Image 1 (tube, helix red, strand yellow):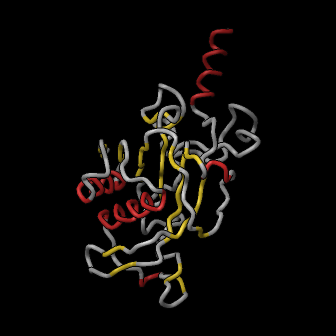
Image 2 (tube, helix red, strand yellow; image 1 turned 90 degrees about the vertical axis):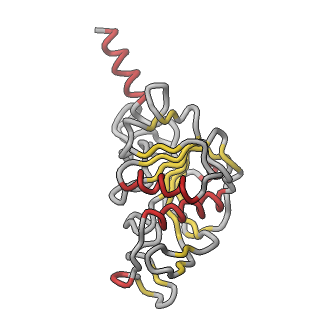
Image 3 (tube, helix red, strand yellow; image 1 turned 180 degrees about the vertical axis):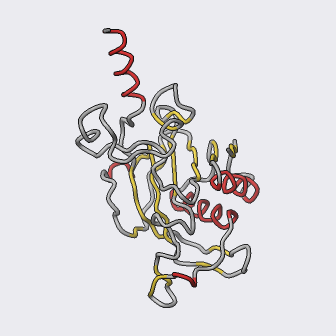
Length: 219
């Protein structure tokens, strides 16, 4: 029926992100003192995606843009920091290819399927509504999706860390999220949210930085 087709069209608009995130890999300032070993990690890189950020949004595509030191002009809405688990990347919401919308046309499958696309998207049906909030989602420390990990280069040897990568904890991962917020010029977030190991990171972030968040949700 016409009503059913309208409902399907409406759902396709909700479940397919209508604005592309900006994805970058950046080198952040500062160092991390690791919880287990007390070693300091420096020269840290972070792979992340943002939604609704001024300045960064002008950079367009989701290609790896190299290691950069610039920062955003600022978020255009209250910021939600999303902490992924180790098995998830920066795509918390669906990503549509810049310039062309979804592959297959509007309402088709997205270029990248968000691992929390049923939670984060445009519209009131989503718990994290991209019409109301700016979102930052960073690949956690130690994960293989682009942040500092066993796959990245150890500055002391100029070779991949591999088995020499130190033991890390969610506390250390929370520290890297804070360094990224510093890089972006964000002093406080509306909420820090995560599920599974991301929830552990959210709790550690809340404990370490009590003045940098208003709400904490650990799933």
